[in-house]
Length: 165
Image (cartoon, rainbow, N blue to C red; front, side, top):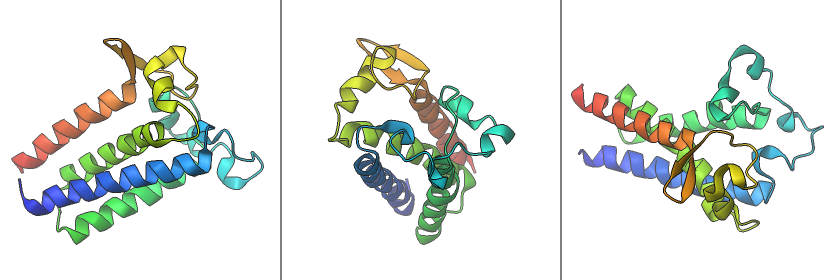
């Protein structure tokens, strides 16, 4: 694997971890923006939900304006900048990085959140307090959000396709 490609994936993964931690500091024990003042523009349900069924990927939970800005403006800009910086021009790698970044950021929120036992709640799946994830897959004695599994499979397929170019 090309060193630049490795650095590219590593940099976006580290960004995801750092941002997941920062997001946990902002949201504290109130996931999915549920602790935000609902009168603030970023805490309102996004009108994008009416146009695209994006929330269906997250268990039919509507996305807030906050989520739209992060997932569809901020994260892509960081990834595109990283791709440019590391000279990665393969669209499959860029999309794979986005897929990994979104899931790694979300997972980091659970692992690094010091305001609640969120990782323990995550592994309880539908029996825990993580109300904003509705689709779970049981793996042994614990649960994994289905979108994590989907993201990993998608990223692997995209990386494989990128290697074929």
